Length: 565
Image 1 (cartoon, rainbow, N blue to C red):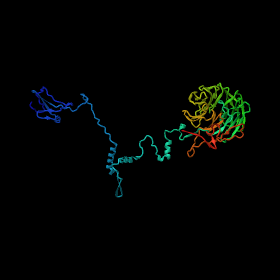
Image 2: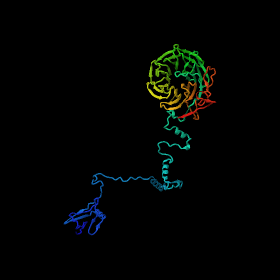
Image 3: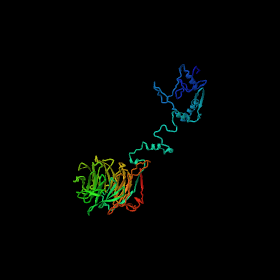
Image 4: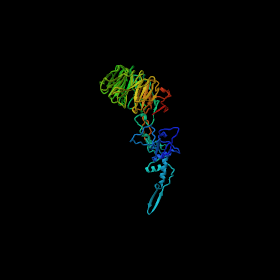
């Protein structure tokens, strides 16, 4: 075949064909064209295609000329072509500069402008002077940061964006600023007594021990009471002794004359000037402590009076037959009310501080809450399974009553006297003989008998144990009383020991910020004029601790301490 103008494909004698054949690349473009004289490269074909060259295809006597078909795009997703009218953009790669490069580049720019930044002309009269700053090393990456900080008035050594203030350094930890930062931290609250800044120390051994010979070992009696005048009264067999906590003097107040008579209960009046004494024969006697004279005797009970409770001029007495009488000491006919609901001996009785309600517990395992204007109990609770002697009203929540059961119960229940609901329960683990609420802390103390004979302090309402004093006495703790300042608790047991515990000590601040202990004299001495035995000062070698526990020995306190928060 003769060569013609354009691009032709020579024929071969081996494989004749009726139609022209042209090889293509997978992308659809021409790969190469073979002529009789030379081989044309792909690059030359592309150059010709760009100049809109034509090709001539001959087959026999038929010759056609057409433009080259050049495929400019290869679509990976098959034969599907992009939609018309939709503009496609290629986002490209994201450029993330390095901080070191940016800092060095900015330093170079800043240094390039250093001649204008660090040169300030000033004119003084007719002469001009130029002030030059100290040159900065261009390789120093902190130069730009220093310039920005100087312009913004910031300190590079301080934290600009932070969630909380940075902790103060140890160099100035004694400064007032540091103490102020720590003391006023927003996470600190003073609502809980356990979150005090200073640790509270509770002695696990008594501060003072007095002998109490002749104490009757009877769970149902109440033979200990502490007045608002800081005088402690205790009943020992036929006598009542008064110990003055300020002076340490002991005096005998009452000595009953009957052969079978004995003291079964004592209770101070609200003013601390009069003392009510219950007897085995069923009488209630009122004595003037200062003059040591009996003011009156209110008789009528058929059995012993095991518990007494005052509310202003009204003294309530609980009898062994289950009756409760209210006596008005101002009138001749002293019996103003009779409360009949219990079926067994009354062993717990206490008035609420506002005088609106009276709580009673008895050997019939029942707790009654009485309204002062009614002789029918407002609420009757039968949750205890043993005698209820321990009763106490909360001083900082008037309608909260705590009651503790005996040996077969070992439970302390907490009652809402407004609704009658039981709001909490604590398993004390042993016989509950008394409960005392703290006036300073949200805590209460409970004394116990069998089998542990311990004292425990709990926080309320979490019921967490603050401190426990195991084996506080050699026998069960029968009675307890709290001092008028609410800091010291006195306990007595059938081991004939009267012990004083500093459980709720206050820590007022003096001028130097140090805690001072409240002044309460616990010095004791053998009471002059006491007959037939009385309160004697323990020498630290006898009594319940056997010389190894606590008390005062040669004027020095020997005690073990438990530190709590």
